[in-house]
Structures are given as structure tokens and as C-alpha cells.
Image 1: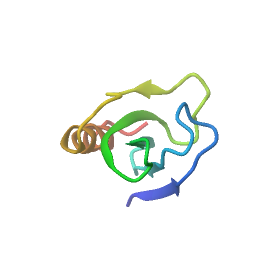
Image 2: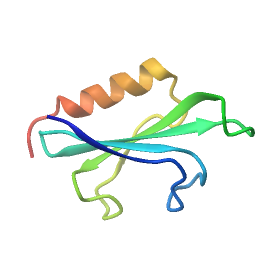
Image 3: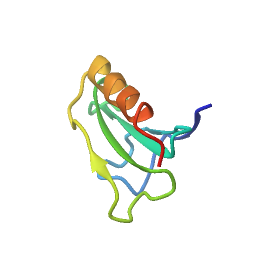
Length: 87
């Protein structure tokens, strides 16, 4: 089972007004996808991904993934996070 949280305008990211989705996987890991929108804040061509143990964001455990990933790269990276050994 995977739960998720979405923030359409997170103030605590490196890119304010860039929507973020965090996926909490049953293996104890979470993956984050920041949708990198253009200046119009409508069109999105790339995303940035990261992973951390669930509940450990901002505590020195964050692992950065590709910062300019196309959709298939971002989804593959998040899939690999979901397949990691259980913490």
C-alpha cells in the first residue's frame, strides 16, 4: 500500500510554487517528486526527485535523484525507491 501527500505550492522547497507529491512506500521509504513548471506555472516538462526514510525529510537522510528528469526517468527512479529493501 502506498499513501501520498500533495502540496501544490510548497513554501519549504528550493522552488516555491512548484507542486510536490510525496509517496510513502510500505518498505519504509518515501519518494518526492517536484514538478518543475515553466514561467507560466502551467506547463511542466521536467521533475526533480528525492528519497528519504519515511518521516525523515530534512534530517540529513535525504538522497537526491535527478533534478531535471523527464517523466519516464522520474517514475523509474520512484519505482526503484519503492523496491528498496525494507528499513
